[in-house]
Image 1 (cartoon, rainbow, N blue to C red):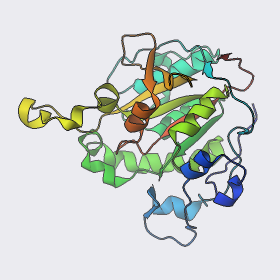
Image 2 (cartoon, rainbow, N blue to C red; image 1 turned 90 degrees about the vertical axis):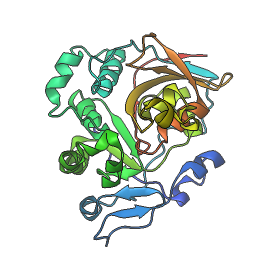
Image 3 (cartoon, one colour; image 1 turned 30 degrees about the horizontal axis):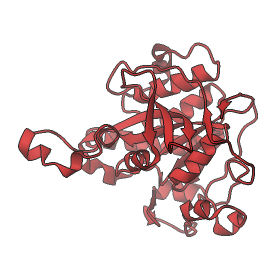
Length: 292
C-alpha cells in the first residue's frame, strides 16, 4: 500500500477552484517557523516543540475532486462493534473500520495489545490504523496535547502523563505515513467526502451532546447532581443522505446496530470544546460503497 504524503494545512490560494463553502471552512494559519512558545493561531493550537520540528502550514492536495458529481446518498456497510470498557470506544471504532475493509484479526482483545494506556487519543488511533497499513488523514485544530484541556474532568487525571506521549506520537506521524491537516472541517465538506464513497470517518464527539443536545440548557448539576462536563467519545461515520441531511453512524456505546444523526447535531457534538475537532478519514480506495 503506498505511503500517503505528509502534507498539512491549506493556503487559500491553493483552493481557488473549490466551492465557496469549502473555502470558508478552511483556516489560514500564519507561518510558525520562528515560534518558541505554544501557539494559538486562528482557533488552532500547537505545542512549541512540534512547531519547531515541522512546518505545519504547508499546502496539501484536496482530499477528493470536488468538481466530480456526487450521488444523493452513499452508504458503506460497517458492522457494529460494541465497546467493552468505558475507555475503548476508539478501539471499537478502529475494529469496525478494519472489518469493513475486510481486514481479519481486528477484535478488541487483539487491538488492546497495541495500546500502552487506557487514555486513548485520536493520534493513538491513527497510529493503530497504520499498523494495518490503512491510509488515514487526521484533521485537527490542535497539534499535540493542549494542557488547557486539563480544566475538563475528563482529561485532568491523565493530562500530565498523556502530554509527552501524545506529542511524541505527533512527532512520529510523518514517518508512520499519517497525513495530518491542521484545520477545521465543515459539516458540508464532511458530507461531500462521505458522499464521494472514498472515505469512512472516525470522529471524536462530546458524548453528552450527541445523546442529549439540550443538556446544557438545564440546571442538572444543581438540581440532580449530574456532571454536565465534556465526555469524549468516538463514533464511525459511514454514510450520508442529502435528502434527509443525515449521516449514518455506528456508535460503539449504542444498543442499536445503526444510527442516524443530522448534520447540525453532529457538528455541535464534534466541535464541542474538548474534541479539538479531531476526525480521522480512512481511505476506501478499491472499495465499492452503496450509492443512491
